[in-house]
Image (cartoon, rainbow, N blue to C red):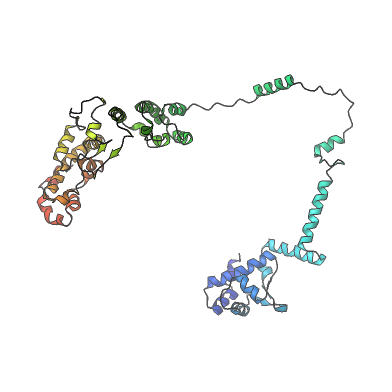
Length: 422
C-alpha cells in the first residue's frame, strides 16, 4: 500500500525501536492506520483508543500512541485527536478525489446521504419523462414513429383462422434449421450388448475417451462377454461390473476363455442346486488352496462342459507349458497352478529362461531354511507375478533366512553360478 521508500522510513524504524518489536510488525501497524485513512479519505484517525484499535495494537494501552508520537508517525491535533501528517503525499489518486468530493459537500452543507437521495430523484424523474399519459413506457423507436405523419386508414386485418395458424406453424417447422444428427460412435451398440445397463452417462464418458481401435475391440469382445452372462440369475448378475468400470479397466482385453469357464461354473452350480453368486477365496496363499465358488481352481478351469464326471481328473492348467511344469516341480511352494500359468503366459521367452535358472536359488535357500523360514518363500504363482525371479541369491537369502543369511550364504553360492545367469 505504501511506497517502498516509506517502509524503512525514520518514523517506522523509531517506532519499532521504541516499542522493541520487529521492523515488520511496525510496518503492519502503520499500514493499518493508512488503510483506514484511505477508506474515509481523512487524515484524522481519532483519539488515543481509536488509534490503537485501528492499528491492531494489543500491547499496553497508550504505549503505541506514545511511541508513534515520539517517532513522528502521528501528530496530535485539537480536542485530543491524532492525524497522519503525510497522507496527502502517499495517498493514491482515488483517495484524493474522494477527499475533494467530501470537501465540496462540506462547503455546500450536504452529507453523502443527501447527495445519494438527489441522484435517486433525478433517476426517477428521467424514467417518468419517458412515459406517456397512460403510464406506459415508450420505446425510443416508438417515439420516432409517433412523430411521423399519419397514414390513410386501411381495411382491418382478417383474423387468422385455426387452419391458417396450424399451416403457418407447420411451415415454420419445415423451414426451420435442421438439427445435425450426432455421429454414430458405436456406444449405443455397446450399450445394447452389455449385460448390465446402469450409469449410462458415466459409461458414455468412458467410451468417448477410447481410441477408435479400442472401441472396435470392445464392440467385438462385449458380444462374447454378454453371451457368457446369458441365463445368469439375479444374484449372479450383482457381480457384473458397471460398464464404466469395464471400459476403464480395459476388460475387453481379457481372455474370453475365462468368461466361458466362469459361465460353465455358474451353470454347473445351478445344476447341482447351488445358490448365490460365484465367489473367490484364497486361504493364506498356501499351495492348492485358491478356490473359485468353493471348487479348486484347477477343477474350475478344467473344462467348459458342466456335465464332466466329478471323478475324472481335471486337466493341469500348466498343460502345454513344459518349462512351467518343470519350474513348478522344482519350486518348494508350487502355489496356485492356474495363476502360475496365467503369469507364465505374460512372460517373454528370455524371461522364462531366467525364471527357470532362478528357481534353483529358491531350492537351495529352502534346503537350509527351517519350517518357519520356508513360509517366507513366496509361492510360485506370486513369485512369477511379482517378478521376484529377477532378484539375486543374496537378496533372497536375506529375505528368507534373516540374520542367518550371512552365515549360510557361503554354503549356497555355487561356483560360476553368476555366469550361468543371463
